Length: 369
Image (tube, rainbow, N blue to C red):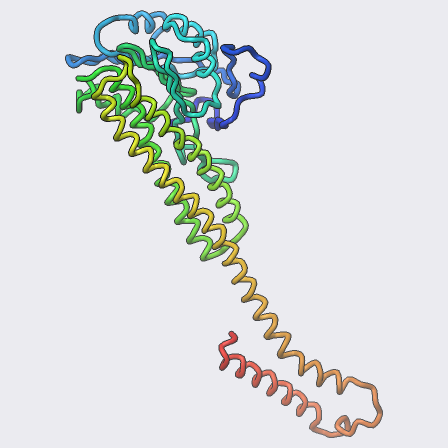
């Protein structure tokens, strides 16, 4: 996913916006950050004989083409911040008001809803490292993807231009695989599958980041490393929230009894279900690794502190007898015979040096440093 013009893409939280509180069900209220970018519409129409791709189509032209009976049509809408456009598309496609509400409410948990005429699927589209935070470290981009499956038509709504579907578009252009031979249900499966494949890339990037942090902890366990570990723990929690409900979504598609999902598409959905479970297992492993990194940081910090305390203790121990000797001969008594000896001062220095060297040798032999 690429950042929109005019600045870094903002992250979408998994929480309903406060602006929806008190509104009636079905209210089409955009809950994301304010944006002034235009909403663009792309259309790909294809069949086994050919494929036609059109970018930045006028909305009315795109809706007219979607209504054509031949082939499969994929309508992709980039931007959901202009609610009047979403309402116009919803009216043309006869979408339920609750569906339009979900499209512009950007805190949706992945889910599937059956409206008989069509299926509505909400997903999270993730990308790691495409933008940087204020500390210069890579951040997770978390974008809502709404997918509507009708008879012969798939409509996708994205928050921003740029997505993970370019390999899928290339397969359509080149007529690779079975994509152009099957219907809209298989296209919906392919879109879900490529989103899940992107999750694998994200968790692999997190695995590399965790390995780098482990090396940094062993070399120099500073507070920046701990902050990065805590940051990754929060982001892997977002990944978990994006992936965990996918099992229910795909299971719901597999149980679909209507005409929208063919047995062929359902067979391939089982493979996507397995992939989702693999991602979930990997995310759980990453969270365990981050917890271990946190413990490793505390252990490394404690070990480092023990080394410092060991050195300070050795120095203090060496100076205890030296301080005793200096204290004895620093007393102001008149009758101290040693003070009148010509060699008393160098003898005292020799004694103190011998004591210090002797103690260092004893400590070294016992392996204390």
